[in-house]
Image (cartoon, rainbow, N blue to C red):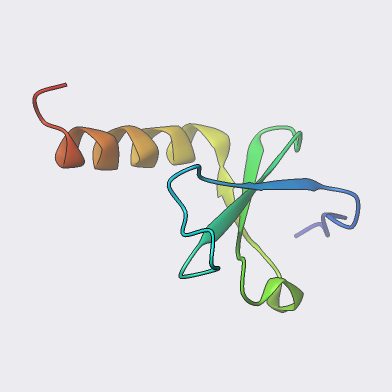
Length: 70
């Protein structure tokens, strides 16, 4: 397994996130073929790395579940 340097990554939260800092995930952009995901309240704990294609299927699945009439 290779190490991924995320020290200069740009992290973003969903616009639906609680502005007061509730339970939020952050996603880093610009990492080829991977989607790093971390807890916004504890970024020092590191990130989980997901294959970009798998992440896309996951997001599509939860979007369709949340809004089935979309």
